[in-house]
Amino acid sequence: MEFVVQLMLTKRCNLDCDYCYVKKENKDIKEEVIEASLNFTKERISKSEDITSLHLSLTGGEPFLVPGILRKSLDSFLDLSKDLGLTFQPSIQTNSTIFDEDLVKYVSQIPKLSLNISIDGYKAMHDNHRKFCNGNPSYEIVEKNTKKILKIFPMTQSTTVLCPEYINILSIKRAFNNLFKMGFRNMKFGLLQKRHDAHSLKAYFDLERKLIDMAINKIINGEFVSILPLSKNLFFNETFGINLSKIGCGAGRTTFLIDTDGKIYPCTICREYYRDKTLLGTVFFPSKVKHFHLKKCIIEFMFGSVNPSRQENNLRYFIHRLKTEKIYDEYLSWLRRCIK
Image (cartoon, rainbow, N blue to C red; front, side, top):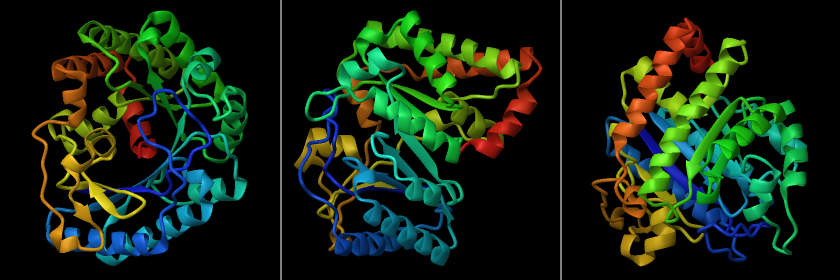
């Protein structure tokens, strides 16, 4: 079982994305909060015999605004995972408006680290929602920096948010092709919270089939590409016999968001949308942190009824296409080397 710490390094960000649910403030995490977070993590893990890996998710704001804090957090939690005999699986989400070559080289050397870039498909899609605080578009600098990052860290992941106006075949095809041309071989497409109805949800899962077909065409030509969450579900299902869609997120049990001031929430979405209703406590008093468990992921409450069978049907279709093309084993072998 995986223990997940989502550590909010800063509430500052140089972008003002119109769909972002994180309230910006001029606050960075302090060293004493990081130290207390380590103690909280150690205490929680010590109470369970099932934890085999520690996942540290470094979030913000924009984490690359605080490179020293980012390094300190990674080093400290890496040391903790070694002390506890756990596999360390860190991840970092960045908007790629800041290129720090030394920092990228540093994180690229950490085994199993996943670097994720928020980039919304192509220029028009991206600039429509992701602007700098002064109102200027951000795509061109994001693309420029991303190409530099991909040269150092080829399996960097793209994260594309699909707003309702882009739930159509032309947009998804253009986004996939542009990201592939840029150099991404690890892509994630996701929906925007609270802006979708039953019709757009169905349309999204129908479009996911088109994504599978586009990915298959690349894979047939030896250009292997991962489409998340489908590829990760395939990997875990075939490698470990684990169906991720039936596990749940673990929020408040094995997943915790730690705010810049040390407050603990089940996850980022709980913190931003439900605040005090889901406040569990603080890292400075770990023994007083409340237990909390969602019977189903908070995202499902926000989207309304999400039929998991649609995801499972698309996964079965993905596997069927791979086996039909006789590249299933080869693709799975590639996933085992590349998926974090």
